[in-house]
Image (tube, rainbow, N blue to C red; front, side):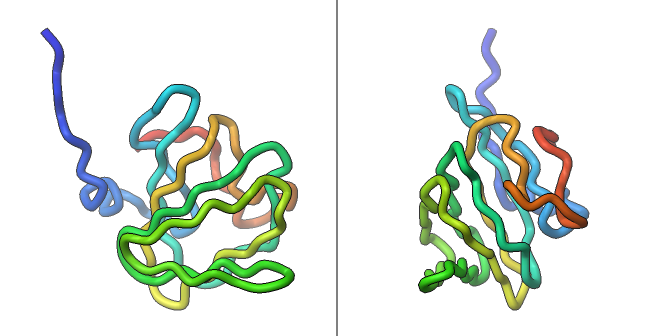
Length: 122
């Protein structure tokens, strides 16, 4: 017998201990669906081989680019094209869903203190 259980994104976010540390909540074909809490300023980085989808659940997220920016509020999403350098910033706590392939390092081509464990489930 199959188990059909909804995933509560709000409940999953409550389980997150650290900011900037995405955790997988589901897989979809060859992609992971992740939740993450953001607060403060992230590092400039890019993902050379993949696009990155940001869907804001709560709060406000600004994604900076070298030539502009996009502001996202709850219910809005943006796809950062592969190879585009960007820097997410959340002045207040923000909850976000990310959709990306397995193995993606959150800091892309710029590893450092904010680099999180890859492919960790919650």
